[in-house]
Image (cartoon, rainbow, N blue to C red; front, top):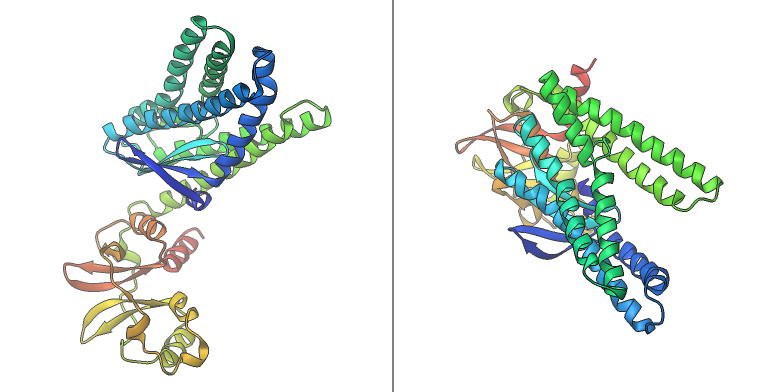
Length: 369
């Protein structure tokens, strides 16, 4: 999902977790504010000034997304109990997501992390129902709306469609029964895709019968199908790479580039000759960093002969290193996180080789035959 959240901005930190808002959130925020201010509040509490409805509409929308953030924080709080760090919580068009670094250590942890979200929504529903029972007028309408929406949020998330909370609960049950995390993930993802397709087709049906919400159901179905499909593919990849060490598939005979040569020489003698997307930059046996096609593309062609590799190469970062004994799946996750196509394999201060995304893909392809 990382690609989906590229257009998100950090708005604060809670429990040490960055809270981010995706640009699609503003679209939904505007629609919810408008619908509540124009239809819901005027009907629930007539004869109030228009500005009062708009104030309550904005407040209700903010509290709604606050409820979504609370839901995700509940997941995060339990995840941290199991030493799973949270990269961020992002609010977007379909609600929110807590991006966790790693998977739960066992089925019980998966169950507790997953169920924490819906339980938190039911808790908020109870709080808001209690507040609505002890107030009146437009304030009662505000709390009543929040109570109903949190109840719906809790129930909806319990639908057993992975990667929704209910789907993760289902995965924990299958995982506990079959003692196989990959099988459980693939089974839950498969069920999730079927449920997503039901949403899509039911959405199409409601459009033809002029029932409200058809387009929204189709969008939710599409999002869930894409997420479930990605989870299935990721699990299949993880299973195929399970137990495989970096040293097993790394490139040991590296082709390196000197920092003193020109970009013209680098292009003609290395990039065109070998067809690789990047090369380690080495001087007197010392690894300095990496030069890739991305850096080459930023240089005007008429400057190739006057620009040297040492002027444009990327200086080495610790994040671009991996150990020979690390598993390949860890290397792949690191490449995705650092947005790089290759990692330097080191043992102590000695460079052992290079591992690339293309190399991993070829290994998986050959092994899958």
